[in-house]
Image 1 (tube, rainbow, N blue to C red):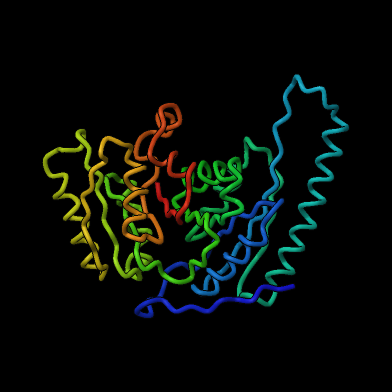
Image 2: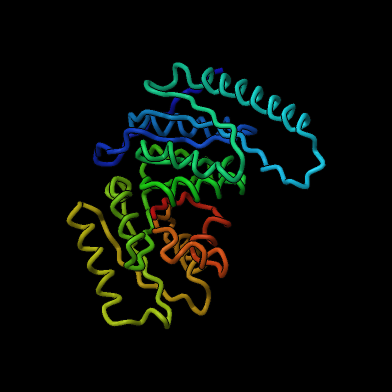
Length: 291
């Protein structure tokens, strides 16, 4: 069986700058993610690098599992990975003009570095629903591609075809460097959207001079790039920023959220929580992230 490819047309016949896509695939389930990646790359005339990943736990010194048992398990896992990589090649063959299939067998502790190394040479890292719902794999992608490479990550938990530009995009704006980078790296999507809602969440701690002016400044910047902008200043109503963003995304019918990731130090967000961590743990819309 091979994939049939959906055809699509971007509004305004925009030429996308995405030429190489790294699709992260879970060795245990990948068919839906692979199809979405093929459709995405076909729509953008982009090269697809399908990265099939199998992870194992780092053995503890106190483990009762013998060395022989660990080696046997490793042989079985690598043989399964090789077999699944052949399946990926069969599925992709004839469905897309340019592609390659890579495979990684790695320990959890090193997976982020393996992913980051490959993310340096692509324009976008794409994570489909199957990989996104593998919490361990998703976190390794975030720690690797997002935090150790300059490449943005697009997580699509819906399996919805993203070859067509979302008609409505929510751009979460907090004037941070991460938000500015996400804005620039997602500019193709923003230009192709019907409306981009630049959204500022107002909370008591953010009522600083010039806060709304900064929202107006990024809106003007986007308008000069041909983006149709709506500047939305919303209240958190005493709730978290992430809940306010999710609620507003539903109200405007957003098809994608664009935001900067880990504006505060990662350790602080891991210990005390943060918008990025919360958004990643409860995904229901495609999420474009840059750090």
